[in-house]
Image (cartoon, rainbow, N blue to C red):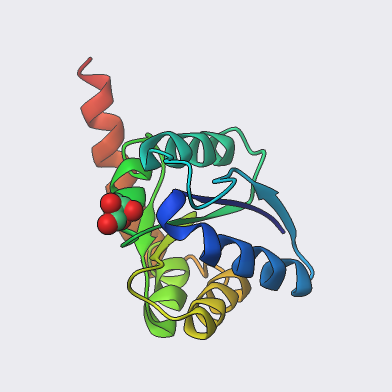
Length: 152
Ligand code: RB5
């Protein structure tokens, strides 16, 4: 799987550790920064780039990191077609994929420890969307979004 990984400066350290972990799991990582923890990076731009790359089918999924995970999720969800969820536990990470078909999960370095973050990411990446009832509900979200944009 090709995974886009991006952070702001508040989550640079977590990004480095998750990058290594995702590669060790056998996946390809595309790094969208940050490049260090000292240079301020505004999280919305990173979220928009990863979300757009998913829409353009350049990435299979995205992992976005900031201090809380919240800003990244809010920003990524502004890109039409994207479902991003903040997940700090393995059950939510699994359901973000299996129930919500989220293309992106987000985590906060100020919220979660590294070992749990690795497990959360691992469970998310290894989950697949089963379709079925969940597909019907996700389609309702897609329909609402499309109706909104159709209004112009
Ligand atoms: C961290 O406090 C915050 O400013 C930023 O990294 C991100 O969490 C925003 O949502």
